[in-house]
Structure formats: structure tokens, C-alpha cells
Amino acid sequence: MDAYQDDRDRRRSRKPAKSATTGTKGTGLPTAARNEQLNAFGPEPGAANVGPATRTSDPSTSHAAAKRAARGLTTKQIAVLDTFQRVRAARQGLRPVEITHEELIESYAVQRTKSAHCAWYPALTDSSIRTRCKELATLSYIYRYDEEGTTRTGGRAARWKLTHAGERADTRALRFDRAAHSKP
Image (tube, rainbow, N blue to C red; front, side, top):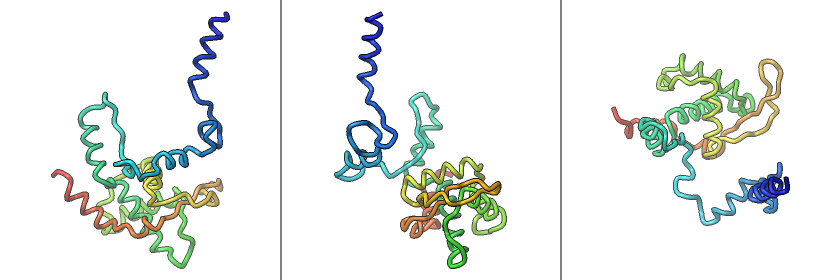
């Protein structure tokens, strides 16, 4: 019985204890701040790119897709960013430019079907659009503004807003740059 307890204590001592507010106990820094501290001399090469990750067991087609994504923003990310910019332009001066996922998804669907300028938008599910938002936030094109939005059913929802980089990004140039690098 004592040997069993000693083994459990040894295993427990190898894993750092987690704290809900500071990541790993003892550093006093949130996980993101700790990572920034480790990368004080600048970002690691390729750190800004958020693309699909592959495992060694994935098929070659997955690895090829990851290489394409490493070139920059994916077509899906560009389409979602373009939707953010179009909603911002349409609302400028009329209403706040913070939008919820629901509003973004509705705007994406409307623009994809009714606007000739957005005919290149790929078909995306609601979940895929939310995932692209997270990726764009990681790349600092958008950020989570607050949680004061509401859903159709009256629930609370996070609102997202473009950063300065997201406002200045030329999605038309990004889109054509992607087309130039893709294989026919």
C-alpha cells in the first residue's frame, strides 16, 4: 500500500500544478504573458501563421493543405475578414461596429448569395466561421470586444471588433495573392 502511494506522489510531483488565473503555479504570469516573456526577442518563425495542424499519421493531402496554409491567410480566413470589413463599412456612423457570431454568420450568407463582389466566398458552416474568427483573433486581425451582445433568443453573446491591422488589411490583394500561389 505504501509503495502504491509513493508511486502516485512521484507522478504528481512531475506535473506542474495549475492555477485558474495564472496558468502554471509559481510564475505569477498568465499563460499568454509567460509565452511573450519566453519570446522576448521576437516571435518564433511562423508563429504568426495559424493554419491547420497535421499529425505524422495524417494522409499526404493533409500535409499538402498545411503547406498551402503556411503561405499566409487561407481563403476562408480572407472571406471572413472581408465580411467583417464590409459590415464595418455598412454600419459606419449608424450603429456600433462590434458584431456577434450570429450577425457575422448572417452577413456572410447574405453577401455570399447576393453580392457579385463576394461570389468567391467559399461555402462555410456556422462552426467554420466561428473557427475562422478564433484564428483571425490569434493573428490580431480581430479581437473579442466584450460580452454585451445578445443572441436571437436573448442570451448573452461575445462581440468582436476589427483591430487596426484588420481594418487596413487589403482582402482583395490577399485574395488575389492566394489565387496566384494556388495550383490550377
